[in-house]
Image (cartoon, rainbow, N blue to C red):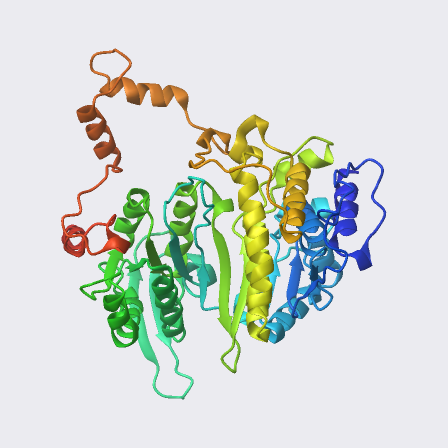
Length: 542
């Protein structure tokens, strides 16, 4: 059956020690060259990688990850110290999720983790896969086990290729608390009392007491832990300073007063430890940390396409806003997703993964024997991030950086030469396997110190947005919108009409009369931000 074929192929790809025979009805397109370019010097010495945890998933991203390991990593890096964990639904089911607990324990010990996209099975998938029971998302246990502080999600940029934002956009999403851990009940009319009982045995604290007059209600209880917000603040402000981008703290504290402590902690850390550094670097000459209400942040993410900013937010707001960042910057495949935690003795735990899922539609196409074209940029950035962090823990970061920088250059140049996957090059784009092979070939040449025979043109490549698989613009609706502003029915819109249309959509570029330096020249001024917030707060208070 197709389920059996899928499972057998997945197992065959996980790790050499567990390879199985591939069923004859499943087409494998991995090419024969698995060692990069054969012109490597005979005395080439592999880099010895420090220990790292590798969590494998399933479907198309597992298949591509195995190709990356075989063709881009193993020829140059000794990964014998890596610890592999099979996080497929079938294996989690077979081990009663012991594999998840083992992976979390290993991650806490080793502190550097790469994770492929995984599946949290729906009720239908539980039945189709023949699982004993449903499985929770592994992310919850990982975040708790690694004392998750923040999920860093940043834009990925390719020199010479125009994506969404011109400069980096950094985002910190509080990794715990909020709606995701909420308890809830559907109840009728009555009285609802929320009481806190302190661990120290002191008197209970009444948090809320209200009357529910409706006959049908949903009651939700959740909390936002604050102990690690100071760590989040240090991580965020340090990264923004190093990247030369302007930091913003995002909350809805104008209405949700319980979000005020998050802002207070962030601002206290900034003023005490970073204010003078930002003034000296000219990123923020006035030294004032900006706050954005979440409503304003949704609009600025669309407007500030020059990039050069960072945002930090609560768990749910961060989840939603980073999805918006991903769409502006082309797709989730072009932003990172890194969970940052800490050990009991203060070491940073970092888990790196792609921001997209297992890409089921391409996997099914692959199983049908069809050609596919999956862009592995996000997966590769995550793998390189984990390798670099592992090396930093063992003091070998310079040696590892030489490898990852070479891999990144080979990967980026392949896109720049117009040899990308179809999401970047259209119908002329390479298949999944062809792209992997082309980058492997280019890596071999770089490590052999051979000069490219192709010359890079001094121009920026701008991939058409219509190349994306999820491109689904309603052409009829677009035509109606155009005709509304094409007053002369001559097939063109003047500058004034264009201004009206963009202003109506809320995406018109905004004036910035108080530029604060090169790092923030494309952002609204401090005064404008504060004025916008004041107006919003006044509106909400009424």
